[in-house]
View 1 (cartoon, rainbow, N blue to C red):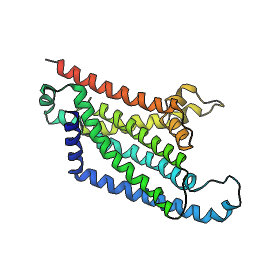
View 2: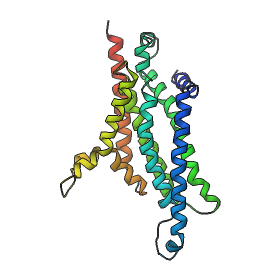
View 3: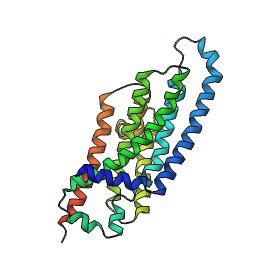
View 4: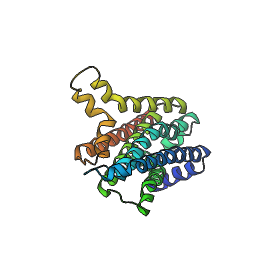
Length: 251
């Protein structure tokens, strides 16, 4: 049942003009960033060759591309998640959804996995950009894999939070704005913790989405960073299930 719901959501996304427009915009923006970083590398290539331990293609091209992709997806994911459940509420089809002989967990996971399948396609297209450089250069496979894994975990967290906020309102626009504001707050939380003090707040730094992502972009694979994103995702999926269960129990 989860697979059927996920397939339905994925098919609905690819039938939506909004999803295709978003996909085109992402490729246009990130394609430009990729070409700019390649130009930067070509300009510095001669000097870097004379420096021992100098950064290579992965550090100069792939890492900035992945960082920019995370910012772009922070703007885009709320537009994709805003209709997942709020549209059901707005059109009153949520009653049929709640009365179906399917568990709330299956419904939530189906919608989430359908969205994640679309986002994995987006990430695959992003990852192909630096991989195209293998035709004339070399990449650090560990650093590349760590950065791409970090981007996947970040996007999974974005989608889980967006799905939950879509479940608490019947206005898709409100869901999108709330999701963007919440994710932006978590993204810049580390900046707030370090502002005006010599030592950043440990709590704010840990809660920041950016802190954990930066470590993975540097190739530092720490299980605490992976655990943070997995717990974040699981927590918001569980909250979404609880929210729908509460709606089902209402008379």
